[in-house]
Length: 181
Image 1 (cartoon, rainbow, N blue to C red):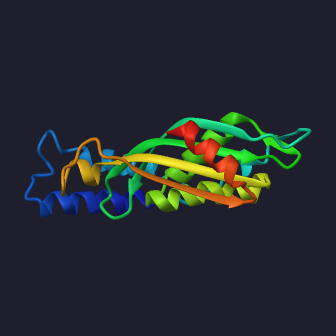
Image 2: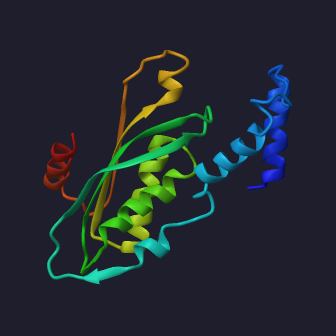
């Protein structure tokens, strides 16, 4: 991210809003907002390869589920946050990954301008690509501030999306969905 351009853009926005960017409360706001966006969008040019390549050999192929992984992301339509929880279930093919690595994969994918459906799919694709399980299911439930703070203003409404990739049997899918709801 070009911080100089971002700072200038925030200064221009404050001007467009009729604000005095030199007043005490706003004097350092363009830099703070630029720093915030740099942090919130730090996953823009990253993949989860490094995180998901640290694996351990296992016998069998019992399903692994990590649920209630909290996340926040930035809606690409309104540049407003959405946040919630994600569950990841996968069926290993001779290797598993440390559980913290799944949460880090979520963090990397969430730190981009996103749509919830896109985020859900990206996490599943990263896991398939770098962990190579037999199958993966990613479930996401989120509250979108573009729905709760503006527009229809429906605080507490949540959106659910999920994606399955690879060979993920229907009975296992039903089991996971029952566990995460």
